[in-house]
Amino acid sequence: MTSPAQQRLSRRNVFTGLLAFGGAVALAPAAAGRALAAGPAAASSPDGVGAGSVAVRRLLAGPDIVSCAGWGARPASEQVVVLSTPPQRIIVHHTATQNVSDYSRDRAFALARAVQNHHMGTNGWIDTGQHFTISRGAFVLEGRHQSLAELRAGTRQVRSAHCVGQNNTAIGIENEGTYMTSAPPTAQFDALVALCAHICLQYGLASSEIYGHRDFNSTNCPGDKLYALLPKLRAAVADLTGDERTEPMWHPAARAAHWHEWQEPHAEPEYRTAAARVHRGHHHPNPLDA
Ligand SMILES: [Zn+2]
Image (tube, rainbow, N blue to C red; front, side, top):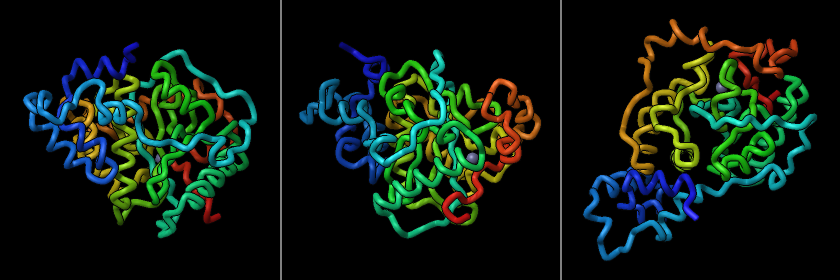
């Protein structure tokens, strides 16, 4: 059976250069991009890159993602809501926590638990707000329960709490760290590329639909440095998915005129609580450092 993601890859005829993805995209998406740029001729190369190749299967499978059970999540306080519609975009965040040099799995799991505790205990949300989290050590973790299963299925999304006005339409990715004056570690950024590429393929999203939190709410998130990397992120994702390299529909200068139009807190039940309202637009008060 052919999955929607396979069909998308097929349509885009991007079975070129994916050997690079299979072995090294987590470390070098730019190299994968150059390989993809080599063009269709490479598709019939002796390398045998095709729909059934290991490299393509790996791209379709996406990065390893640790489930809620894997990192020891608490149960959600009430049943999470699975919307019948697919997401329309991806929103990138930073956690505004310390830029730790502990890149271990244990640290990643501790971060996920701390964020969940903060979102449930302080913000009053039913579970972790965002769908996915990427640690400084490049571990990719499920955030809100069922986000991973729905991503793998590729047709629906879990209602979230990461960006006012976007919680019924956008996949939220939190990147551990504070990226106002320093950029994320290369491995973390590359994990973000791989995750975004997988999300775009699964849901049929264009790379131009990758945004930063500040595009929608009044916030520093995801930090000046990470925000400045979004064009590079979109280009790397486009190279992997075979999408056209395009920027978002509106120019950043237009953000101020438009972001308020996205405010729809009435449609987002978790923002009705007083604690949650306090955190609108600046929802990352250092859960590990408090
Ligand atoms: Zn944010």
